Length: 126
Image (tube, rainbow, N blue to C red; front, side, top):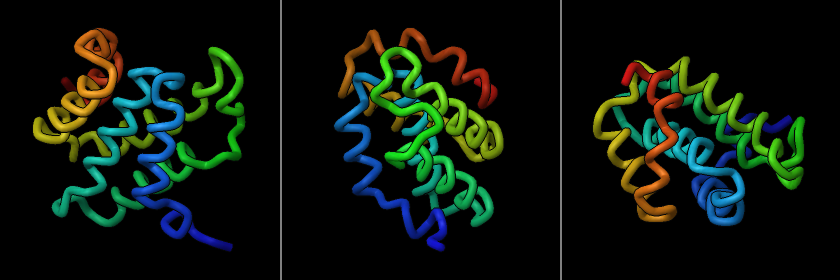
């Protein structure tokens, strides 16, 4: 059986964001971006990267508890998995990671995408 790290790839992450980002919404994309940029930080320990990889693998997986194509609730399970991982590794989410995630979010969705992120930022002590 393949491990999560065998199933996750940076290309598959960006492909999922590109294909479903607007449908998923800014909270899901922002949370995924926070985890992605945390995963790429060399100072984050292996155990935290394993948690992140598991959550991002679930996010990119075509097999979900609630299929992504279901209107309104399709990304609810993805957001739950991402937020759980975020809470676990929050100590490693610094201002630089948040800035990278927000910059990318604005690049894709515009400034209005930053208006609904308080709930996610509260999970990381912002």
